Image 1 (cartoon, chains in turn yellow, red):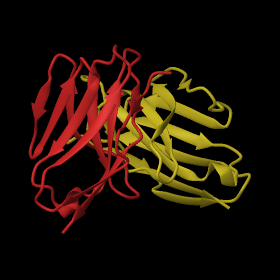
Image 2 (tube, rainbow over the protein chains, first blue to last red):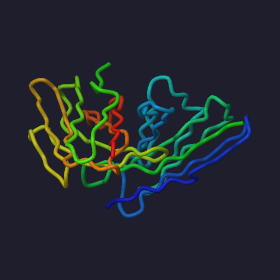
Image 3 (spheres, rainbow over the protein chains, first blue to last red):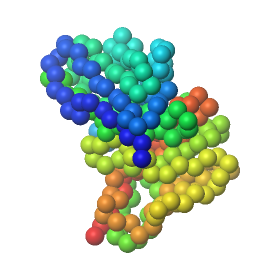
Image 4 (cartoon, rainbow over the protein chains, first blue to last red):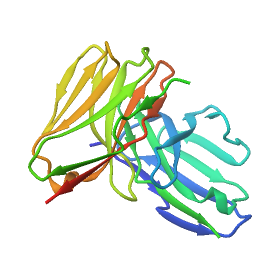
Length: 115
Length: 111
């Protein structure tokens, strides 16, 4: 089946630094990628929708200057958490919509711990 | 805003029994629904999907039922196995092409 890869799987960073998370669709082209955040024992919360070649659409309450999203190609989207703080520690998950259909595939997620 | 929710936060079943996980949605404009399985520390895994022009779809050991009249979605797992233990999310795809998730149901399979 379709594969979406996230990197890194785990990252620990110091407070105040920036962290970049990559989301790649490995065997299909994705015009749209989604970024989610998930806290323990909670559901996935959509942060932003990323369309290839255009600006991301952020959900209400998500700071666009803090969570920078770039979707430079049909197979790659990146999420950069800028000036990270401990409260940004979470599980970040991306998903990609196959260009030819509605099915959405998820990456394995990236654990971010800010110390 | 409109959302997708779940009736039962935790479901415990005996190995070999059938499991039924329920989901209610409120956006009548949603035209596509997906069930995902999420194991601890991993991303959601696609299980099965169904379009709004269908009321039933079967996969391997799983069946999804859609009742548009009462806006209800269910996932049936036949002969539940320990490996089925996970959190299950239903998700709806609305006209804005966004995927909205329900709160999740934890399925626990007792050996």
